[in-house]
Each structure stands twice: as structure tokens, then as C-alpha cells.
Length: 362
Image (cartoon, rainbow, N blue to C red; front, side):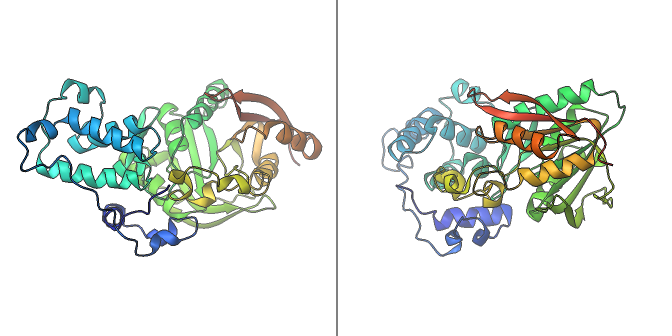
């Protein structure tokens, strides 16, 4: 059974991220005033003879691991380890082992209880601690912006391989749906010759991408636009963000690479996702329409016109999509595009597709 998010947890995140919770939930119900969970402070035992033992890292990790397990929380041990690391100001899980007898102070224990309360409300750990590692980078994360997954690191790997193989000195890249900026910033970090235009339909995602870019000193080669790809394959721009507020004419601009991790989950499957996902992450970053191809089809159309010859479109897709995408490419874009490769993810599912631009659209 999924718990209601506690009022204390809502207040924590409003103060931490300055967010409007009416925009977080799939059905907008999280913005209502909800009853707080009343969790006993089991390890703040004033009358306990062995209070210090109950306040050690080893004890609280074991206690909350068991509590998470009882409540059906996914990855209970990983969840509490990351939360405790955050509370003590460490990024190394090994510190919990090396300092397992360390006693947490009152302020740390109170913060720990509040963050664990959020986890019991099925809030993702990434949102609770406010950051997450993606490849070599640490990114700030906040709800409801999509949390980058390990599979997307594979997408970046193949994109970087194509970039290194490219004869062009300067690589012009478009990312469609930048979210937190994980893909674009990883590429900029690893490729000094890359220049990226990143777009997202959500202004909050654009703001977060810019914030991460500035934190990582990667904003000079990045243009971030609040923009959306339309069903006809055209891109409509609303606003530019960040240092490089470049005006981009997408009807004329050409790119060497286009990359996207678009919404690709079929609508009927969205409501079967874990509460951590469907309650907290932006539905627009997940829902790919009836067949999951709602946004992939316009991206194919745009790529057929906007890619330079020899350039690649690289997509993360649902495991049911590669053959269907191949069919679409061969049926509608055979003169411009060639379906080249399918790559599998860590679970051995077909997840990444590469499509080559072979001829000019003109």
C-alpha cells in the first residue's frame, strides 16, 4: 500500500526546491493538504540506558533498512545508505562501514527521520538528497524533473563514440528533451569540440539544466531553449535560458548529431509504474502515447531534414520499438535516413537505436 506524502515532507521540499506541488502528481492530488505520517523517533530514546548505541550509524542503517523492507520500499538498504551519507555530508558508502560506530547528533537524527519519512512516502532517493551521479558528473535533481537512469549512460557512450569517429572538428549537437541536462553535460564534459543546443518543453527542466551547467562550468558551449517538437516535426521555441541566449532557426539549422531520450512508455503502462515514478516525476517525460511513438515519429521527421549527411540520430527507446522504428525509417525516409544499429541495455533489452543521415533532404 502506498502512503500519502506527509505534510512535513511537502514543506521540506517546498523550502528546498521552491516548487509547486500541484504540478508534481499525475492527478494533481499531491498539492492538497494531506495528513502527516506520525513516525516514532525510535532512536531518540531519552530514557534508554544505551542511547548512544541507538544513535550510531550502524543502528540507524539497520533500523531503517528493516522499516523500509516492512513497508515494501524498493532497494531498502541502498535507500538508507544514500540518505545517511547525505545526512553526514559524505558521498562514499564505504564511510558508513568505516565509521559505523559514529554517533549522530540530535540535528542529524531529526533530519534523518524527516528524509526517511519522505522515502516512506515513496519519494525517490534522488529527490530526497537533491543530487545524483551520472557518469563522471554530480547533477542537482529536483521534482518533477525526470531522473536520469543508468541506461541513458549507454546512450551517451555511443554518442561519444560517434563524436570521436566524426571527421568534423566542431560537432554541432541537438538534444531533444534535456531534463536535468545529464546527456548534454556529459557530452560537453567529455568532448571539448562539442557545441550543444538542448531543448525541453518544461521551463523548469531548462532552468535546472542551466543551473547544472553553471555548477559544472559547462555553460559556455551550451544553448538551452524552452521549446517543443510538434507533430509535424517542426520545433517551436518559447524562450532562451542561460549564458548563450542564441536565436536558433530550427527550419534552417543543421546538426551533426541529434540525441534524445524521449517519452516512450505507452500510456497504458504509465499507470503501472512504481509509485516513485508515477507520483513524483513529470508525466510528460514518460508518456509516449498509445504506442510509445508519439514523440519519436516527429523526431524522425525532423532528423531527416536537420541532420548533416553522415550525421547520426541516436535514441533511447522502449524495447518494443527498434523494429517498428526501422520500419518507419524504411517506409518514409529511405532516401534520407538509414537504420544502422540496435544496442542493448544492462538488462539485455534492446534500448538504443542509431540512424544515419545518408542523403540531403533537398
